[in-house]
Length: 204
Ligand code: 5GP
Image 1 (cartoon, rainbow, N blue to C red):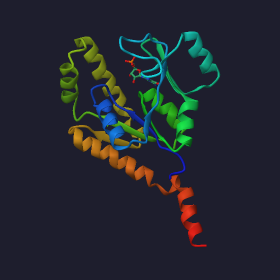
Image 2 (image 1 turned 120 degrees about the vertical axis):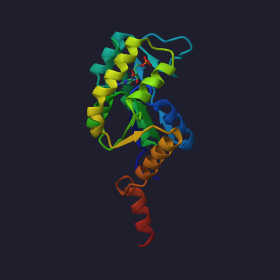
Image 3 (image 1 turned 135 degrees about the vertical axis):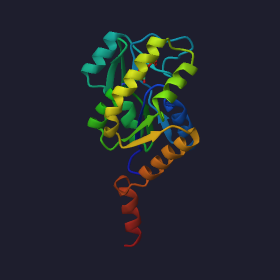
């Protein structure tokens, strides 16, 4: 077993296919656990506290922030979102992989605190494809779509900060690439010092 689980951080613009790729990875790697974020926004219909998010008041969130309880946090659309630190570290210590699907601001904070994480950016193959996917959802107005495309453009400058970039022009290939990354990361010698020590001890 590796010394610790992998902290897998996945980012990319909405419409890139992150969610679908992450769900497929979870099926292939039963050891992957999603981290449940805390947020100050109200639950949407069907959302359950402790399943989709931990829903909290602004006061509670700010008090936890003061106690340094988050691995990363961000304010998105006037609401706080954060990744509870203790939960993530506990799972990693138990050898479980933890997957965070978070935006770039959050990912850069995680990189600062936990550089041995695996940072993956999912990008659509072109602006046209991204726009088509966003329009195909029929959930956003033209203004919202224009905003998402501008944000996607601005974020391109940050991709170099990630360890891996996956162009999602074919879902099966993208999932295969992501799974290969995780397989390789699990085999890194630096992540398997205990295993190496055990093997060495057999030769004594
Ligand atoms: P929603 O309110 O639609 O569930 O999420 C709004 C945005 O917040 C999404 O872009 C989502 O990725 C981001 N988000 C959700 N949880 C976290 C978190 O723990 N940290 C950060 N940085 N962003 C988050």
